Image (cartoon, rainbow, N blue to C red; front, side, top):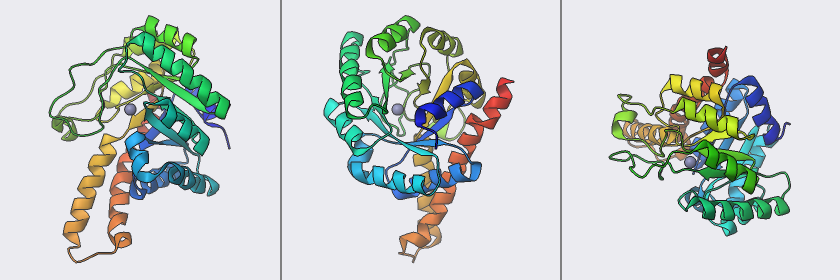
Length: 292
Ligand SMILES: [Zn+2]
């Protein structure tokens, strides 16, 4: 099996993006695994600090390892890790990558903290990939009343300095998305729009793959343009959470007497899988076709 780094390099060469999906229980993980198997594609699953507090750090590693042993090309990311301690715990447990997130701090402090995290991660596992974040896109992959106001878009020169000094393997810039969705996005009445020239300028300034966080609710054509301009990994979380909640509510309503989870939850897996499949198709072959 290819390493995650090889999967990312292959995606860069083919002008497609690798899908990254968060999970905090088995239903969503199953849905992502089934979608990746049906489309025969590599996929990354992530657990943030809060998500892995619920799932369990070693449990997440064991679940993903079991799916890999069954032939899936699936990788595990310790998403949005704010402390060195939690990053080291994930690296020791066997995660494939860590997103070290000090993006709320001033850039000099962000650089210092991330630089130390990269060194610590690599001394635990030289093959682990570390992603850093420059700029700010808000927090919370949930439904918000309004879009966050303290967004800070990434300057290409800052991105370059950050990558050179920290030696991160991947960079997450702020280029138009925000974490979470607002109700009009869930209805499909409004979409997030991306700053494509900024993505191209940042990609030109750094030599590492770029990750787009907060992808839920983004305009489809902007996704294609962003991939063409240099985005190699795209995070989707809130869309899956919305599908999970809606699917679960409907399943419970339809089967008002049922109590066996394994009878109720397959419908939820199906609903979440539909969302994952749609995104993987858009990031993969559709993106490659749009780039031609
Ligand atoms: Zn994120």
